[in-house]
Image (tube, rainbow over all chains, first blue to last red; front, side, top):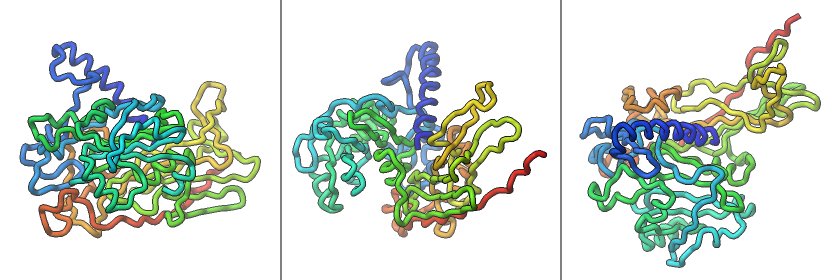
Length: 120
Length: 279
């Protein structure tokens, strides 16, 4: 879905430009890394709203609860862009062995999935 | 996964889970790839994808989550495509990620597909996945196979040419985005820099499709949740979202709010009216 990523990154540039303008007038308040302040979808909803804007309802956890927070728009940070090399990193795997990503990958292509949790 | 292994693609999962949780998960699901433990979210922060909507003081447990997503890299570790969605429940389907990593389009054996042909062209439509899961973004491919010497054109064309277009009927339970062309060879037919395209043999339209909740399984509320997302209002059927109150009757277990069954889509292809050639 090339078009999705292109669309969102295209919008991202627009947002960065927009936010830089806002940051100048607002003295940079609320700015985060990269100059982009991500707005949460829950910020436009009632505090006790249980159903999010995808129609997903969790009766006991309002949309504003930390685990349900997600961006209100497609303008949020998605890390390295197409054409950039992924950063170097090393992390322990499920067996406690330290895996150096680029070294372990060798000359293979890679799929790197950042997901929320296997626990919940 | 077999396709990936034979094409030398390695898969990694990264989360903030402790190693012990990953060990049992890998055992339970017999995973053949590594899950990496980023307990302090250092790598998540290094990538710049920390969910900044959750502050440490909001929740010690939830702080450190990423905006979830997937990177596909080439042999040098350079990103060739990435899949990030606004809502954490949305994700790229396995079929679309595998196609991206392989740099090729595989038609899964059991994937819904349909063909139409006449003496000049064969049109095949198929889905990148065998089924559609809730909020998994898949891709519908439309492939045009032409007889030698024939061309298919798209875009803004001069008089006497007819553009080939692909459209998807509005379908309850499905959102789709505008189609785009792959293997598109821009060709200036007018000498004026217009964006007309000539599609030669076996070119593809790709159109990501997103499954919605299916009406026959769900209690549709008919409500529109229009809370600020102009980016999605262009999608055709936002108002069709159903609201699933509970998945199995236990409110505590309805966290995901996902329908219990995957959709098994079928594709129907039909050709539009034949254009009338000007005399």
